[in-house]
Every structure is written in C-alpha cells, then in structure tokens.
Amino acid sequence: MIKILCADALEGLRTLSNDSVSMCVTSPPYYGLRDYGNAGQIGIEDSPEQYIQKLIAVFREVRRVLRPDGTLWLNIADSYAGSGKGIGRKPTHCKHSYQIPADSAAAAMPTTWNAIKPKDMIGIPWMLAFALRADGWYLRSDIIWQKPNAMPESAKDRPTRVHEYIFLLSKSSRYYYDAEAVKEPAVGFYNAAPAGSAGTGKPNARRRGNSRTFRGGGAYTHDRAQNNSASVKRESHGLAPNESGKRNRRSVWTVATRPYKGAHFATYPEELVRPCILAGSRPGDTVLDPFAGSGTTGAVAAQEGRDFIGIEINPDYCEIIRQRLDACCQKGAKP
Image (cartoon, rainbow, N blue to C red):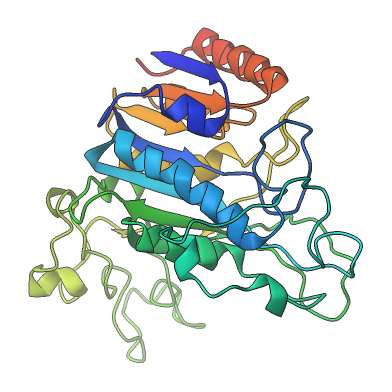
C-alpha cells in the first residue's frame, strides 16, 4: 500500500488514525536554508524558537499516529548565523509576528536569538532533540551521517562541515528495534596480521585478542531487540567469541550523497534511509514520511516490502514521488 497526501505536514498527519503507522523516517526543511516558495512552509521562521515550535507540533502528531512500539528517525542539519544579509540577524522574510505559547516545549528553552551573533553556529539539531524530549519523546541515539563527498564551503576560519545528524527517538521506553537486520562487519585492529607473520600459520605472540572477539558487539541480540533490556549476559559484552563476524551497528554512518534527477534540492540517499527502515520495521509494516520531498523514504520502503504514507506540501514533488514509486513497483519491489 502506497499513499501520497499532497498537503501541509500538520494537516496531512491530522487525517491519519491513532497508532496506525509503525515508524517514521523523515528530514524536515532545514532552518534558514531555502525558501521553497510554498505558503506555510517550515524553515523560514523569524527565529530558531519558532522553527522548533512548528516542528514540535508536527512531531507531536507523528507520535500520536505511531504504534506504541514505533520509532522516529529524524535527519537534521545545523545552520550558521550569517553576516546580516540572511539569517545572521532576525530574518525579514516572515510578514507576521509569532508568539511561542507559554506552555510549549520550545518556551522552556533559553531564548537564543538575541544572543546569537553573526557567524555563530545556531545548534538547531540539539535544540530540536532536547525540545522533542521535553515534549514526551524518548531520545535514544544520535547518529552521525558522515558525507565523504560533502560540498565544499567558502569558510576559511573553521573546518568544513561533512556531517549531519540522525536522531533515533521512540514513543515508549520499549520499542521495536531489529539489531540483527543492520549489523555490520566486526572489523578493527585485531583483524590485520602484523608485518612478517604471513604464512607462518601461527598467531603472533604480540597480538591481543583475535578477529573473533570484540567488546560490546553482542550487547543487543535479536531476541532482546524488541524490549531493549539492559540485563544482558556477561558474554554478550565481548567476553565470548563472536562467531558471526558481525557487530552491533555503530553510530557513525559514512554514506555518500546522491542527487535524484529532477527532484528536491536536498535529497538524502537511499542507503542512509535503508538501515533506519530495516531496524525500525518489519516487512508489511507502514513507514511514514511527513516531509516526503522526492520520495526517497517511500522508494526504500517499497524496495524492502513495507507500506508507505508520504505527505508533501509541494504538488510538483507529489508528482515526482508518484512517478518514482511507480518505477520502484515496475522494477519489482519486495512483496
């Protein structure tokens, strides 16, 4: 089942039933980066607090429609204050003033905009993560998306940014997470034979451990993935041989960016979305993306045999999504 709603994220979410989707993978518009020309779009607010408050409202609806064991995988990047021409001072592209409700999660944050100076990093990802936690989400992990082919930057007085964040949040303290589905090869300094040892057939006396052992790799086994129990056996902490040659997935993911022809300015790659969907859902589950963009989440969901609900405010992108997902089905997505 594939369902595309051409609507504002908040409006589209309000049409969905409680506890009706298994997981959400999404990347909302980044703050102050681009005006997509859509009335009511998120990302061009007068202040970071207003931007965060709007996203809190969207993700509160996401939490409502998630099943009790559901998760949210949220990709977000930071923004810099400029030199006064863009968002370095209060933006002037919003015509109406906006007051943050006193009882909102964003109101509990320190007011940052008056303290932000030109050239400051704003800290959007963690502002959002902490605000969502204050609003009731469980903040479970921060994943670093490291981009080996990141675009160059003109700044010469700081390192070039090559990463974004993916936050894993859950609706409940117990949630579905299939660690087995996203395990990675257990590689490290134990695997390489020291110089001069090749062909001897004997372990080098200076090697500590071997390629079958590692620390921490078995802490989350498949049968414990659903309840995330902290009471694991002693041997699961790397004190027993690792027969599989794999380990629990780490929190730094190196994935190259890949544009999608004729689509969204800021598409994220399918291989960034895939482990999120594999870990957070079962075949036949429903995956949600309230900021569907060019349909990357939907394409991966279809490829992996999941149902998909996408919400997108831009009618042109809604058509791109439909064409892309039709092509996935014609290529033979998993049943």
